[in-house]
Length: 275
Image (cartoon, rainbow, N blue to C red; front, side):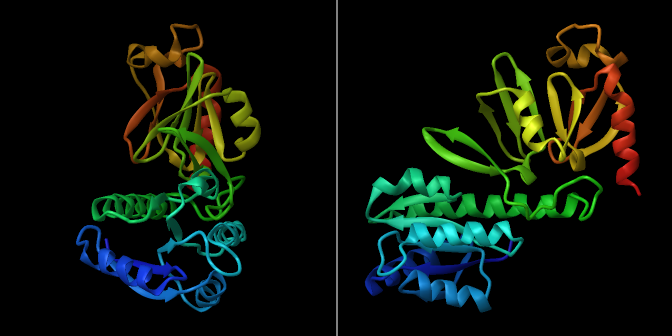
């Protein structure tokens, strides 16, 4: 991909200088520091006239702190405006939980190690690639489907930290035993809770294909007959196995079983995508 256009926001000039040096020394992924700001208000003013992919953001600064600035970016995304990803870079570890509630891509503590920064930048590049893939694949104005820009997230726990996964990136939810698997183009996560609750919250975007699975409408690419035994782990051997019908999911090229009573609804959804 092209270089990550990066805005550094920190009230300490030496901290900005050191971070710029670390960023520019990393060759994969490539980054370009397009601007610096000493306060959140300066950064917000710059973003009104410019765009970037990533903000490397301090927490404690004069005026509005980094958390308030990040909250403003989240509200900006809710209105459909382009919004960069955020990696917090701070001397204080105490704000990490709040940072991930604000959908931060990562949280680094000073002094920042080059290897740790590179891992954070790689995570940003991956998320941007997923976002671009979703925007290409998802119909812009499909009937009954919310737009990519909607600020709608599923909160997950990932290695002891909270993360918010945009619903627009979810390919499917699949119930297994007492848990639900959330699948994106590059990751799988396990959630507590019920599939019915997810359907109630996000049902306009998803299609119920089986009692154990909700699939993003835009992610369904074909409906085909397969041997029922291919999907035994999902069907559970019940009488509603759908005579071997299954749908193929984009990006991951997986097949999920479709119950007999949902085959007609899946056919209708596929027909609607072609209008």
